[in-house]
Image (tube, rainbow, N blue to C red; front, side, top):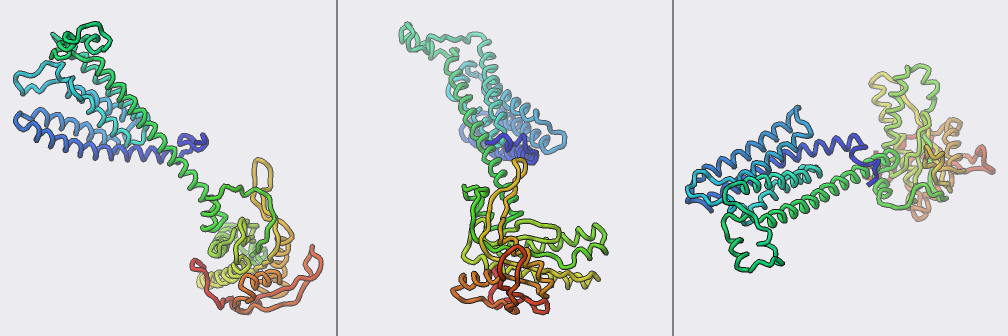
Length: 465
């Protein structure tokens, strides 16, 4: 995992993991409570003929330790070291339970007998529970605390009269006769230290594996969070379906290339004059409302919002990947923009505010795509003559009295996309061909006059505006 994306370097991610660790402690309390209940039922069935008050008291103490940890974790007094303290208390008390005989039972067995069998495996429950905390270091600490606590119990038993160890009895290479070794192994006061050490080693290895699993889970969450942030950043510029495509591709956006696309410019007519009558907060509020409606229209028609330039918005259709209906969607988006502003003006009139007039220019043709800028700041840009012509067409809307002004190249592409037909863009008429600054020859123009209502004679996209 990239160090820059590690939880410690991303405050929001670190806070999320801290919160998840707290939630994990709550889950641990619930799971251990269920486990204690099941253990109690097992003891009641297995040892129904002996007093179980001692065992019930031990289970109650385990429950109270978990409850105290849960309550403290939910309070404002919780500290990171508290969870290590409680797992240590759990391990110490479990070691006590495993090596101290029930005082209510007469003729108790010798202490070393309690070390026989697989009593050590009960520590696996405590270690497994810590994996729910999402804290790999806590998992490792639980295994260490369990091993140390258990061997404190072993040491206590070895201190009792009669207890002894004999490493030769469990050594298959020992020269001692087999019968002698069997006598030692069957002696109720013999402590098989070698087997106890092996159990602790196995527990430490298992805890290490669990810690790695928890760490991998944290890294997976970190990568998913990083991917979510990247998708959120992409969503600021591309439509949702385009974000999904970009997030799945391994090809860099910055690879320079030329392809055809529709380029749209939209801005507010007379914005400079309006600014003279507005305060700065009013201007910013106007732009936020305006750009929000433009963005909604662009994204609803699977366009790419290239940039804002003051009150102007530049959008492209067919970038970064071309589609079968880029030109059609571009003009449909222009109609949606004009309709959105008309609806907004109704709201503004009700609030006693002056109307806003939008002008849109669109051209279709080859564009150059790629990253521009220095190493410190890159921008994915769409450049070329098509962009310049679209901008000039938007400027010419004032001269021609048009709400929308598009090139003949765009209309020709729309007809090609629709099998030779041109969808019913109500009110769109062919205008006079004009020279466009910076380009040789005349450009065929089509326009939607200001006095025309922008309606479509075909269905809008399901997520249209």
